Structure formats: structure tokens, C-alpha cells
Length: 330
Image 1: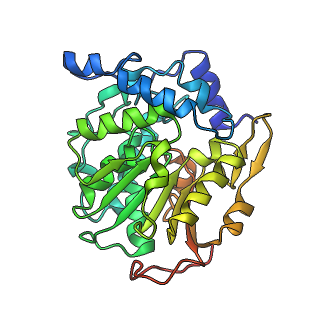
Image 2: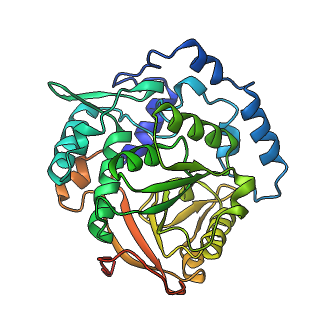
């Protein structure tokens, strides 16, 4: 039996994946001109990143050659968003689930306009949602529950593989005293992340270019996040990022893989696993649950089910860590 994920990919390749609205938005001429492959800032970032000696990449390097910079939130550029059928029903069910677990009303206050190609689904009379919005709220709610974050806490996050800045955008709007530093080894992602967070007029954020990550301060960050990207790279890359987290003495790691395990995609097409690297860098899993852990039905019908992990570094130097952190065995 063909899996739903494989069916989705087949339909996408055949050009039949069209449910959900998608548009660039009313972008002014200056924005359109800035989002160009010949933008000198992007050209310079690519040149600098190409000069860095780093592991080979199994999928993202080629992606830079065809991404549409004015539609970077479109289907499958950073997020798969539509299913081959019944997408609207899935999004309505997921929105209802998010509304039930969202204690702060983020579903409506964070909002979504669909700019830059994000697919929108109308789930209520005056409410349109995207996968970007729903995933971000679920991730923030999970972290609030399992780490015990207070809404006004001065949390400092390091977002590894930040992409276009999806999580950073939502985090800085939801946590008024939180700060976030975004890093990514793909030059186009660094360029878009810096642009997008400025476009959204976010506050308390930094985008650190990959060739400057050695300048980040040890002991500064409360938490590191990695959402989906480690499943899309060879284990050598995961090792590089974990080396950075160890050097920076980051006590907690929030991890969202693409699969039901910690597999990687190697250069030769084979599958690896980065579980050993987590252990080697002294990161121990202290909490794990399904994305829709309050509903078995949603695990079948919710938008893109996955697992959420929280790891704690056992060799972290003694210093203040989030009070209220829940240690739950996976």
C-alpha cells in the first residue's frame, strides 16, 4: 500500500497538487527587486558559504538553483502543505485541535496572510490558516508545557536550520521578552530569513551567517531548536551542529524529525541515524510525545503528524536553567 506521503509527492511531481490558495501577496516594487538572485547580499553570502570547508549536502545544495525567491513559502520550497486529497478537512480538524490546546489565543492573534506563496485554508468564517501558523503554535504550546516556560520569561533560543524564519517570526510575536538567533548553512535561507523577519517587523532577533557562528557566545542560550532539517542531511552535518551546541553549552534541544526515528539522508542515498551523535554529545531525551499527543484520531487525520523531542545535555555547566522543566521518560 502506497503511503500518504508518497502519494503526495507523486501528485506534486505530476502537477496535480493544487488545493489551497497560494499567492505572492501585494508586494511593492522595492520588495520584488530585493528578492532577486542577483541581489548583491545574496551573491556575497553564496560566495562566502562556498568557500567554507564543510560536509557535502544530500539535498539542499541543489534546491538553491530553482527556489522562487518571491514565493519562498510556496508548496514544497520549505514546507509540504497540501495532501493529494481532503486537505481542507485535515486543516479544519487541525485548526480545531490547535484552538483547544492554545491557551493564549495565538491561532487568531498571530494571524496569517499567505504572502510569498503560503497556501491558505479557510477553516472558519473569518479565519484562514496555513501549515506555518498551525505548526508554529503547536511547537510553542508543546515547549510551554514540557519546559514550563512563562509567557514573559526572557528565553534565548538558537534556531538551527532556521530556513526562512518561520519559527522565529511566531516565537518573537508570542513571547514578548524572548530573543532568538537564527543560523543556517544554506546561503539562500540566511538571506531569506534576514529579509522575512525584517518584513514582518519582528523584534529581538539576530540572523548569524554560517561563517560567523564561531563568534556566538557560550552559555548564552536557553534552548536550541531544530525543526525537520536534520532528517534531510547526512550525519556529518548533524555532528557539526551538535559540536556547536556543545561548544556553546546549550542545555536543552527541541527536535522535530521528519520520520518516526532519527534517520538521516546520506550522500549516496542511504539512510543513517544521528541517535548515537546525540548520546556522544551528552544529550539525553527527557521528553517525547506525538505532535497530536492529546488525540489518537488526530495522529491519523491531522496535518503532517510527527514526534516532538526534548533533549537535555547532561554535561552542561551549572547555571540557571528553565525552572519547571518536566523530566518525562520517552
